Length: 277
Image 1 (cartoon, rainbow, N blue to C red):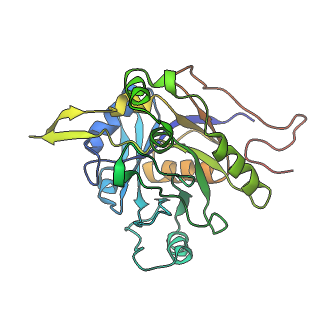
Image 2: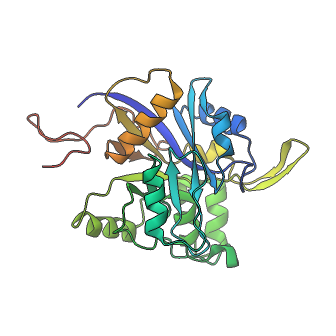
């Protein structure tokens, strides 16, 4: 049951797409929150990969978010170049990810849209979870939260004290996951969809909302590896992705309490986390 546990931050956008932080700034924010891994997934852009690796005790992993306009966004890990999606069926996009040796996780798959962001807040669900994704964002923190805040007062409360507004993964997400699990194996991860919305001028962020450091503490998957990290960034990144795809992870609200050390499994030497019986 025991293994090397890494606290991860997944689904973060940098200046290479629509975030306001550099990769170095994102890594520093992750380190300040005590995270071990941060996964940068810019929209249709893999430039962050040139800055990936171990940085001050934090493993920076770089994938990208395949982002068709209609939805079916996919977090692609371990793919060297952006995967083309325009005019292509979703199955072909996923096949290309896997042909490159990568992993595909459905991003905010249960998106329903919301009033807060106007046109930008239109629903962006995943098209068909029967296709070959390796897992799903069971809880996509920013997307799910903004889509479920139904008044400006709730939004202000969230800005002041996120923990007073966040409670549990949306019940509809859990029900949908249960239904999928009756048909096929579907590992779950937690994603932030963190952008640190704001304005960057002259090499610094002059206006920011939902700062990375604050968001990074709210919701994180803890991944359990068979062995400690080696220090080889490429090998360690592959091990983290493989553990997530194997279901060897749990989702935690670390801003409420440190969940490090939690484990679940069958008694008497039965299946461990991510196993089947």
